[in-house]
Length: 426
Image 1: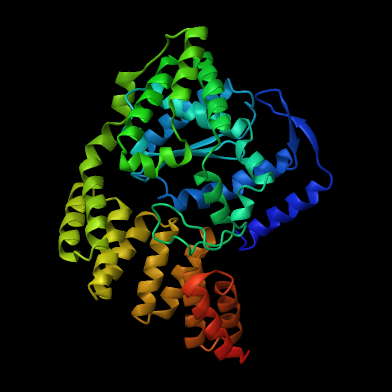
Image 2: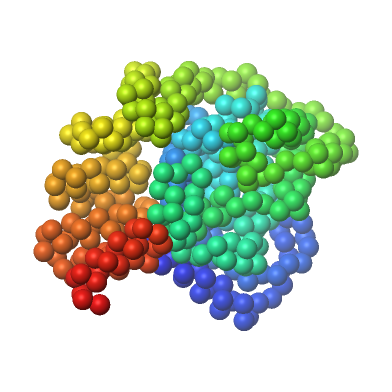
């Protein structure tokens, strides 16, 4: 993804504003302002889907069957939606935060942290149906063209990503995708997605009462200040008694009853539930490490690895702990393991590259940092690539890397600007 991808989208929007017209919302049938074409909508979703996944934990690759199952349920609902021809995709993300999101064009994700909170397939269908409506009704696109997201900074410089250690360092289109995924929906959009999502459930054969049950649960959790949900679902999909009331009225009108799929759902979740103690140990290790309790954190992440030795995130965390304990040699082995298990994940490549630079393994550092930037560009990666170029006497490359890092904000940008001045004298 080009670092200026977000700016390219802004240019398109500004140009289209001069030739704007009205279109009909494909879900509600109501007229609405349309500045972004369907082809542009599909392009945004397609280009941002993978980077946005990466900023939210990456794919839960350990259980391909679970990913297939979620996709099958999603496609069943997509077929009865008001835009069945969108190129829908569904993915399970490796994040404990209970959340789900949709990008333009039908690119949808659900976190494993939300899947473990659900009881049956009908509840899963409720979540996915809701996200399908967000995509089909072009809710993200509408917010984009109204400027409610673009005003945050299209290039995404300095945009803070929840539950992401590289908050504020992610650049370019990847940050824009995260804005689309993490921005809060309006009450009108939420009610609309509830309404049509319930109709999709009914049409696909699911019991729509499951949607009401979930909203009741979410309201109770919000009143109880359930921290994990406040960081996830409630931040992007605020619950309310009004939603519960209107959902129940619709279900009463169209009729409850239908497939629940509890046994099937529990079977499909069995692998994840079996590994849940490992992820709980990992979460605790992260909290301990953030409080500088490194020995305790190391013990907990070792427990996680003993339960599930094929999870890249565990090795990456252990590598970070070893780095914090001034042991980059041990860290290197863990980062190598993480990148071998999940080579596409930018964060693992980034950690590995920074650690290799500390060991003065310049070629390895350069390779890993470039690999990280291929998926999710970060200001820290560009800054350190500049440092490597200086060490290797590649002055023009160093200027290019520092110039890119200087486009960001904060300490990274300041350091890049200072090093540019040292190289160029201005």
